[in-house]
Image (cartoon, rainbow, N blue to C red):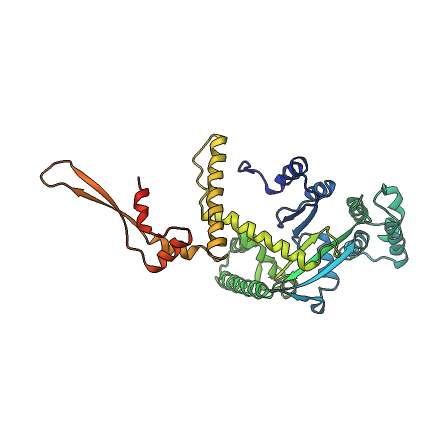
Length: 404
């Protein structure tokens, strides 16, 4: 497909699903997508067409994935080795998640509740099926008793949460949690370096000794340190203020937040609607890692083949340009797989690139404006001859006949 440049990735799924259903007689299809592709709309569309999926999940943003980390912290003993990863599988029902999330909302709101009332809500939720139509009036009495009858916003949030999963109450979520220890150490080292850099900048800021500062001035200077992408590191610091002036006078590292973040280092989460007896967790990881090859091809298309710049305006010419680039990419992959046995093509191409075509211009003596050009290929090394031979060019000198 060739889409317009401002088309979002997640919106392209719909057209692919429709075309697969209409144009191809494929009985089983499993979509594999990265974390930027997954949306509630996409999953509903895939499931509606009876297609399966394996998707990467942003565990910081996914509510169900968050339950795993908050409940038991994913014990080390539950991991098993698979290639260069440690993996473990988790499964939960939507009903269990709704109850856990309700208790978390109550805890975050510092609301005390009676266990019998929570059991009433549990029985109400576990009595739902995918066909159930829920109304606020059915839950109001329980929610009022649960929250002490004080916070109506909290009651609305809990009911909105339950309503959000209407039609999925009997569903189960299957997730495969993957831990890469190398990435874990790298993430930790990178974060420590950044925090050390910010600490040094902040020490300079607070040691400057300006006397005519206001709380707004100090706040602005701190925000300058954490501007742009650096803003996400601000949560790792705690600010100490002067009780009288309200001016931030010092800082310290937020160890609790750092330890919380360390729980996610090196971890990525996959979700799928394929059953374990149909597709083991090792296969889920393997198929997702195959996506990296597709991403590498797109990277090659952008930087190796150089699909950009596209100096065309007519749609038919843009498509022709992309088509030629795809053919070049195909030749590269054929060369890598068939000739180099799946090794990288970069080094061989750099070696061949040293072989040059030189044009000699010979001027005839005594006659003006008469000359003749002779194309010559530079002498090839043994390694260059070997690489040329892989693609059927036995005599690189013969390339002289193909110049124009």
